[in-house]
Image 1 (cartoon, rainbow, N blue to C red):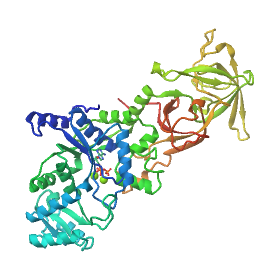
Image 2 (tube, rainbow, N blue to C red; image 1 turned 90 degrees about the vertical axis):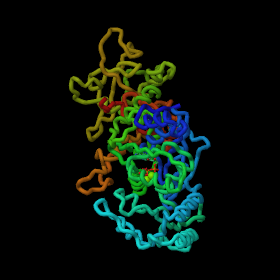
Image 3 (cartoon, helix red, strand yellow; image 1 turned 120 degrees about the vertical axis):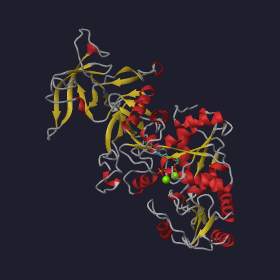
Image 4 (cartoon, rainbow, N blue to C red; image 1 turned 45 degrees about the horizontal axis):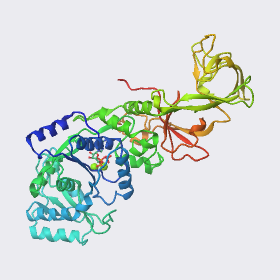
Length: 552
Ligand code: ATP
Ligand code: MG
Ligand code: MG
């Protein structure tokens, strides 16, 4: 059961319940257009709509707003269902498609025409735009505005029967060409589109517009509170006009601020460009702010729900710091994921006084935050890998990791001292020679000498080779859309958003985990097994670094 913190929408619902406006009912809906994959902004809307339904013992419909045959596809329908379920929400038997209402919507349009409230306009799209006027000047009436009901009915029938060309006519609501709210200046409600629809095929060649479809779909489904983002504030007048004009049940439209997240873009229109132009590997590229990308990256459903709860719901538009999203995933994975050792920039270490062929096992806690998570055994031998960053030549005093002549602790195992540094012809360090102190087994010494640094490690012959993919922000700018210099958002793609490390090593236990498995590599970050993993070579995506950059 999810719930939503008190916000201005719960205040409206509470009041409606007091006055009995909807007989105490709460019926919401999440109405995606299947023209792309869902993103984290949609998650906000999903958590809100399904969360309110849960909280008020109401219902939430999943409705595909599928009235534009050109841009929509079943692939998107399926991905949306998968993502909503993955987030932890269930529409049960309340699955709807606006396209299921095509016949009813057509009848409503005819009803409008008969009531003198809609007419067939034969101006071109460009003329209609011109005639609409601007905020400064009223619009101009179309010469076709006063066609008779009979003529309108006949033309609309012809449009429906495929006897007209695309763009030849549209159906418009007859409202007010001088209305200060431009949306009310005779909005187009039907247009001709000779395209196959992913569900209704070639049955229709006229398709209803958003402002006509949406309010009527809400009305037909007896929605009580129809939540949408702020850009639709001006559309509310049309929403109300339409339902009033047709004399049907009236839900209440309420607008809230959409989620904007720093260092990314959110609209499907833009995300699809990143996919189609090959800037990312697909909708589920782990750098994408899509639900499927975030899932692949290693975000858990709980971390996304907690994030949505944290950002809350308000009327004022704002930009949320990406670091808050990372804070939410760290919080969840810290509590719930197992620790392993993974070396993402390996440097070979040979422990010269450790007997050749000897293998010991050390017991590691799977999750120090969770006593029930149990323990596992990790092999230790003469040849090891450590992290290259954990060694430095001529290190300053405050460098508490490994350097020539210095001693560190290999976590839970032994103290080792670096005795020799081996380099290749270019002077690059390729191997360290160390000695270990057998008296420090378990990671402490009896003589009480202090060793500050503790490193993670892997036994080279036991380690599993893995590919690791490190991710950074997809864009270099906090708001890639705000460009005074006229540049395009794609001009600000971060060329270093993906760093592939083909030869990393992980513990044997991570050799055959399932894609989607989330864990922490100690000292390195949170990682998630990628579907590109093979039995020979697992692939891990870095979900987030360990360090928190979120300023509370
Ligand atoms: P996009 O611009 O990404 O295509 P959209 O609003 O056109 O977004 P829809 O499929 O129509 O996408 O959205 C379904 C629901 O999700 C709508 O009710 C919409 O208000 C909501 N939604 C979309 N983007 C956001 C966002 N960034 N923050 C909050 N809610 C959003
Ligand atoms: Mg939309
Ligand atoms: Mg859209």
